[in-house]
Length: 277
Image (tube, rainbow, N blue to C red):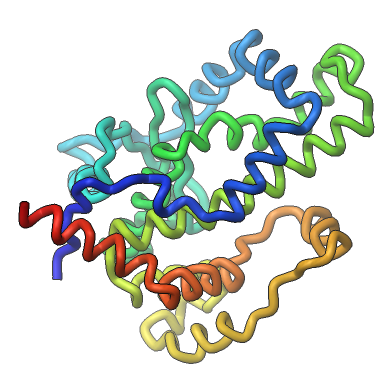
């Protein structure tokens, strides 16, 4: 069944509360505005765009036109007014990324384009549309280059002590992780297929490709349901120290909790009623 267009969708209705809280803490973290100002002052976004686009393939009607169709479809479903340009870059990760504040664009990994189904790609594109609609791109860009920014412009130049820079980095990291929970909700709303979400997250978690045709979705969901969230500050700091991690199991558990609570169905039903008007 084709996904319905979510007419009247309010983006705040699917923002994850953990992201709301994490962003409030980030916004109140000392030093954030100085970093944002420096980011704009020295034109880092333009530089980041240049670096990405210098090694990406642009998606057009003549190259990978099915991706343009899926991108436009995700934008229509999620009521995104600005359809970002789409690119592909060589990467072994199953991912998409969004960059750009004023004129955002989406970059898909070659691994995702080659190995994901159209439904899974719709999920990935929906996630990136959600990032854009919730204005995540600025802080995600800052998070990507924060270590280099600190190294290049010393804490003294930025007006930050080493303690403040560490606290800001930690706040950025925690917000970044929670922003993915909001994006996952956007992905589900875009594809509107539960099995697609579970399948994608199973692959992201490390399900070997040779066994993708026989992913045990029920077992994987059961694993996610039994997953215990880390609550203590120590656990959060350890997660921060571990660095790059997909958190696929934890993310699936959050999606399960959201759908079990009925919030996903409520948004779908509200849009169906809106579409009948």
